[in-house]
Amino acid sequence: MRDLIIIGGGAAGLSAATYALGKQIDALLIYEDLGGKAGRRQSLTGQVADEYLAGAEAVKLFERQIAMQPDRALRDSVVGITKEAGAFHVATRQHGVLTSPAVIVATGASPIALDVPGAREMVGYGLGYSISTHAHLLAGKSVAVIGTTIRSLRGVAELARTALQVYLVAPDARGLDTPFARALRRYPNVEMLAGYKVEELIGTHNLEQLIVSHDDKRYRLNVDAAFADLGLRPNSDMVHTVAQTNQDGFIWVDDRNATTVPGLFAAGDVTTSFGEQILIAIGEGARAALSAYDYLLAWLPTHQSVPID
Image (spheres, rainbow, N blue to C red):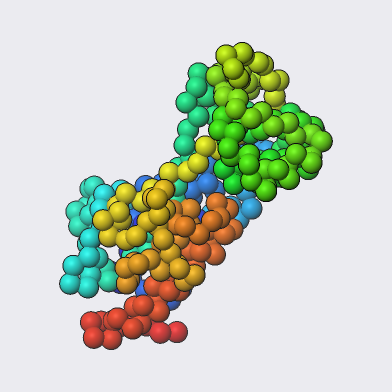
């Protein structure tokens, strides 16, 4: 039995694992891919050198520290978590069931993909799913944002500071009836396309046009880039039968990253704590590990010892 199992190899999971190493906790990081957003080096324009992700270098440092202790990391996927007799049973696809008294879930969330002709081919070549990551590349450019989530509205405001033109494509016009959306109307370079939907993305080597429709009429938007923000799907299936989630599947956590189940913690984009930034995920991972450490200090005296610094 390990003292702590951390699930997820993104910024939050790596931060938690690094904290655990510093506390000499017998922790195991289970991951499918290391690095998360920091590990995806293709930029919006297909040019690696153009990309800057705040916090990415810290994540790379965490990766190197984990790599120096291979017995603390396991490449596998987790298919389920249960709790029996005070211990968590973590079922993996390739290595069977692993046990620990504490678990941190940091499995992130996946963007809902734009499902129209040309969208898949344009990902990384003008179409992106993270405005905050790439907004700095688009000064003086024409950009379209698809969707009316709070993340997309915040992204429109960020883009409007430097972009030449920002089109907000809102298939569900009700999403524009919020104080934040109404405030965006004050930007002279923001055009609201209420009730419009995207039909197709067109481009030879990079995105050049969006085909949108409204009332059975089709229009062409000449753009340099587009962002789809139709929402996120949390990678939380493994805990649905154990911990409380909200209606969208995000794991409920308190201000110490504890879930509704003692000993089970969560951090990063998979939780109800809004962030979707590498730096925020790093902090959340460390806080979840601190909370797990406190839990272990109270739990382990009658089971085994954990070094206390």
